[in-house]
Length: 511
Image (cartoon, rainbow, N blue to C red):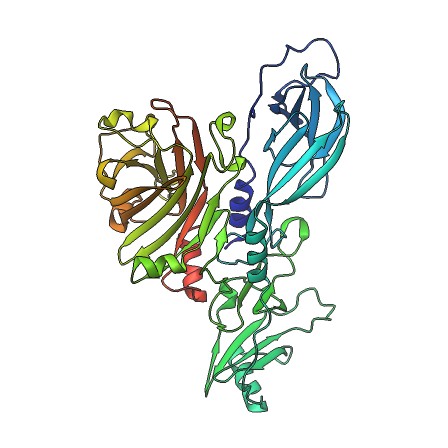
């Protein structure tokens, strides 16, 4: 994936704002005190009140630091005030802005952490981003923080993903000896000059891999590009790694991955993009195994092919939405994950997209006979969006489906919105889809089958890219209380992990 696109995708995870948490109320109007905080934005600052408790309020304050050489020239702070908006001494570096009061003096902060790190991490095939929770406790006068508890929302998911991202080196079984003739074939495949040296070589039972490039200790800032060659029998094939990172000149081994990057071309003179390919299957990307994988963000979600629903679900990752950061509307009504949370899987069977969604909801309100009440019952909303259209000069086609919990365990799927629609089109257009739902302990389960042909029609012959499933909670009939969303994007792979060639084609199709 292109580095600018990856930064855009991961950056999107941290911009959902919580305007006011449980227990908030309108503060007294500001007086003449110079220390009073006032909501608003200027060219140099942004001040926003996020939530109020019984005695204190929490604010997000961003202030420009002027010209600088780094990527972010703005300070980001969490600031405490009293209920009259007078600023107190307690501050903390804070990039939220997701915060709420859990009690009189406890503040919960939800952030997203990239487990790979860096501006241009290699692609793992799934989102290496998990949610972290901090609970800050204020002193009784609100002037300082007296404790700070932090950690991943799910230590189990964190540990599992870390293990996959840091898989050990593969064991080389029955490695064949490397001869001068083999090295000569690798050089010939690279059309290599004498300046290229063999930086790495290793063999397995059926093949050998050679990496040729400039010396790692060379003082030349313009080292020659790397060349990867796979030798099978008498045939030598140059792997198309230049299509991933053009001009990559630095090579490293990272567990079960061959990784390479360009030492220039990044932001502010930094290194360029980094990519990795599989060490066990060198012609393929270094994607993590998806079977049993538990994620907390759906970006780059790999939609894998399968012959049956059972086989597909065994391969498909599960994405969880369990925090306040995933509640775009109705934050004050949301209590915790037992009140409303969601997990979902996506898989491909023949020419259909299967979605399996499990919703935790302490009170299920299904659709009754009157379809006009759909918005104010428990239901799902599925939003699809595509990349920018090169001809129509739009930001991409998009549409939204409503999935209603109808009678006899069936679902009704309706087309609610298209790109450019100013209002919701409800109950008028049935969408070509089928599915079932059932009530489960603590919530309900939905399975939806969407024909890819119908999706292509709405997306102008493109497979969906952006995908946002939303669970709508209506604990009381006739009133929508909370929306819980799981932002993401779908990637349809013919094989997994994809070949280098397929990965490049997908990047050209989906920015």
